[in-house]
Amino acid sequence: MVQSTSFVPDFPTSEVSDWLPPGKRAAVCFTVDDIHPRSPEIFVGHDRTSGALGHLHWLLERHDQLRITLFTTPDWRQVSPFPSRPWLARIPMLRDRVQPFQTLPPETMCLRCHPRFVQQLKEMPRTEIGMHGLHHVHLGRGTPVEFAGLSESECRRMLRDAVAIFTDAGLDYVPGMTPPGWELSENLARAMIDVGLQFVASARDIRTPVSPRALAEMSGLRNVSLIYPQFICGSSLVHLTTNFQATSPIDRAFEIVECGGLIAVKAHSLKHVPGHTALDGLDELYRNYLDVVFTKLAETYGATLWWTSMSEIAARCMNGRVAVPVELRA
Image (cartoon, rainbow, N blue to C red; front, side):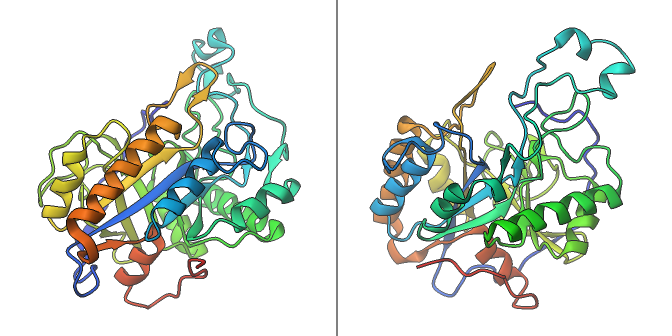
């Protein structure tokens, strides 16, 4: 994935107390980015053992406590995270004013145009829908860092457009987002708060050693807790850091539990896009590895482990001040 080269501000942060329910020593959540109607890699026909959604059904059937957050792009337009016209991307001034990346026409992957796909998402058990930008593209060199350099009003308009598409498509969503490219600017944070979002996952760090004081220093937002939920922007947003993926050793998950933290597992729905193979793309190999990780965690810690979702964590952190719009489906 192409990462942002823009400055990531240090947001004021504060600790969240009592974020774990009574009797729980640590938590697990599982999120998947880049959900959109593109086929066949996301869903293959009616075969629930094929494609990314098929792999998720398989995991849900094997782990009855597992919860999943699908970060979904309402009008996906990205074809590849790499320039289709590389010569254009090398021309100063021009490269930031035109689109050197191949993109899909508007509405091609818009959720309101794909009711069957929306219905497939709605039928998934113990699954919630979060926001993952609007188009997953950015003018100039920064795709997929969609919100980089935009004003607060521009961010607000895009978020409201995303909400309108979810509403038109009849797809319930929870009040949180993973920004494309992990980029969370101050303008985007203010816009998120203004439209009623409560949580954001804007940091990924799968390298920093686990400890109670460890801070995220890899992708996206820096200087936020590696393993604990944290308030940013006063107490208006709950931030959660991704800290485990396909390439992470299983010991990392156990270390997080021993510190009383959140194992925030991440996958991407597509393994292969033109010019790029995602290490955390959800294929059969990654699915099987997660099956082993989840099984060993359940066997070792039993009922003391909280199998949850990002919206549940955010709602508990907010202490019920703002209701989560959608409860997890049974």
